[in-house]
Length: 572
Image 1 (cartoon, rainbow, N blue to C red):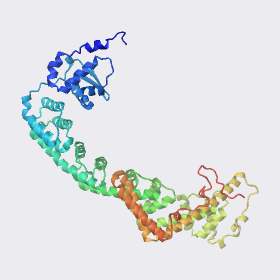
Image 2 (tube, helix red, strand yellow):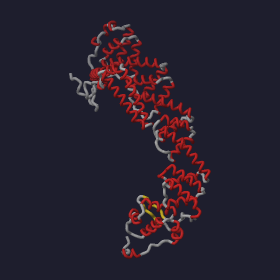
Image 3 (tube, rainbow, N blue to C red):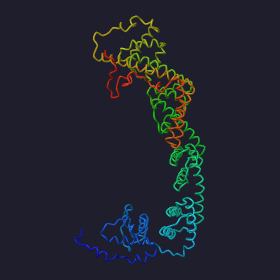
Image 4 (cartoon, one colour):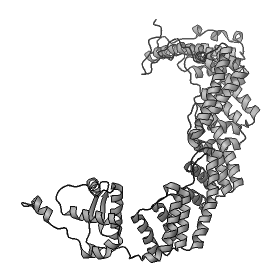
């Protein structure tokens, strides 16, 4: 900080120097507000006191936004540098170093142009500020565009924007045309006529997508992008019809997908979209059955569904297999492996898949009975295959369950059952009465004199697992009974199908057509109401479809959510 300063009176009596070059070259060409703002800013540069742009605008009685625009004009002239627009901060430059000074404009050169320009502006109900008018004249001075061509641009922008017409939009449009080497009246007329043609095309796309506004300049860039990608307009329309609701951005994603798949003609696009709809529907149905949430079906369709459908599996068959996979705790990869095995085994048509699933269902039920006797046994494909082998040995369910009873105390029940049944098969024992006496009861089997702690613990664990497996089976039996009663009712089945369909449509709409969500939700609510009425008539409730566990703390699993053993197991 300096040790000396002018007094206030001295400062008020001092002078602000203005370079003569500013007076001779710039002052005659600038508007009054622009000159006032420049001189006042120059005056403030010589003052040490703080004085921001807002206060300066008040002193000059000029809106702050206009003040910013004025200094933008002086920046174009090279007299200042705008270091910041918010807040406004200006650095003055020497006038002699300015390279962007405005060219002298002869008024008589633009008499006819100004007359026609004001007619167009008056028709649009718009009035330009002096500095806006000057920017237009400077553009014509610095570019070879014909006056009549520029007036066509003004007329085009006035029709597009109406009361929102601005000089910036006019100049931006004119600059784009100049960059495209379109200077003459004929060239500009042809370009704008082409825009009008594209406006009809874009308006149709807007109608298909449910967009209720006029096309803007930026919207035409999408059409140019699709045209450069080689997409036929009919293919774009087909994509818009598929989406039904959405934005140009969501349409662009779908069109880009078709371009990537080389489906560029209308015929190719419609075939691809139809196939895409089939694949997406299959993915959502399978995902619902598996209990998997899918947001974007495309990766699943490309990796799994496309292959499944090409091999001849229909949606109903896939739904049956997915239901089986749900009971085996399978996801998409495991289901794909199962279908691969079925395909290699020739199980493809609907009847074959239905028979396969029914067979597996019977095996699962038998495995559940074995589980209730022997404790928790994982429901895996290997376990089901083992049950299938036992049945192929001509053993009845009664004999298999007898083997389960005799294997209950074993640390690994299934291998022990397999050993017993194999021995009975060799001995020709296919009924309980034919079992040799030495195998008649587990008490007669020789037991080791001493048992290790691990064996005792394993037996206790098996007994505990059998206890809880029996409880869970009883709880699920109530649910299965309710489901069987409900599924025999036509009204319930129709409502349930409508709800499932709505869930698929809802998942798709979240991605591709958010505007349709309220309509889909309303349909699902109506279906849910019909479903509730059907349940009431059948004297059922939603609670009947929920397992009634004896212990609500552990849901009859024996373990609490934190992994600790539940205290509901009876103490001996």
